[in-house]
Every structure is written in structure tokens, then in C-alpha cells.
Image (cartoon, rainbow, N blue to C red; front, side, top):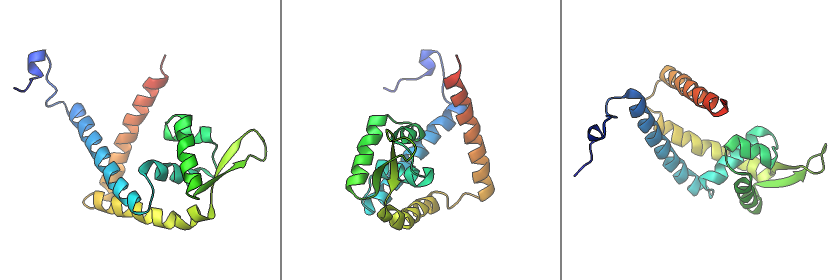
Length: 158
């Protein structure tokens, strides 16, 4: 027998904010699955690919900067960097200004394969957004940015 939320004194059906939240979660999950398939074909996990994209975008970040950008723990980022280093995609280099700091630098292999990574991402995006108009996508991005900003401001509120 299914439990009705109405019997609990509230009803979640029909609240567009809740419906949107569940839909957003489902879409994010399906996008992760699609990216996993593409990344597996090129020999990377989604997590490795995600870190590598940030290394390429952030211009030799520190492990701490990567952890902050990815919103994951520094030791977790360290393990992913180790994996990418062992695969030949990144290297650790001392910072020229502060010898205590290590920069995560993409290797030549990473730069050479960057186009393959981009093509894989493009295939996922092409399938996922095939029926979405550019204006609708821009409006959706604006809505999601507003939601993100509201949630971030709550994080920092006393």
C-alpha cells in the first residue's frame, strides 16, 4: 500500500518548485550516465574527466583550487590527480612564486586529447539538447543561475 503524503498532513503534488527540483535531479542523473558512457569509451571516469576539464580551464590550478572549484574534499581531488598523473594526463609542478605550492599542469597528452574530450561532450550535448531552442536554453540557464545564487546566499547567511 502506497503512503499518501496527504495522510501526513501535506501534499507535494502540484508544487511546481518541488516538481522542478525532482525533474532537475533526474535530468542531472541522466546527463551523468550519458557522460559516463562517453568518458568510458575514451578511458576516463566521469570524475577524472571532470577534474581534467578544470585543470585545462583553470590554467594550472593548485589542488586546493581544484577542490574548491569542484566542491569536493581536497584528499578526494588528490586521489583523482594521482590517477590522472599515472595515466599521463597531468603532472605536478612546483609553483614558481611559492615553492610550497604544487600546480596541477596538463601534459601534452591531455592537450592533444582535449579535442577528443570536447567531441565526446559535444555528442552528449547534441543528444540531450536536440529539441531545445537556443533561447530556451539561455532562459533555462538564467533560471538555474538564479536558483543557484539563492541557495549560495543561504549557505553564507549567518
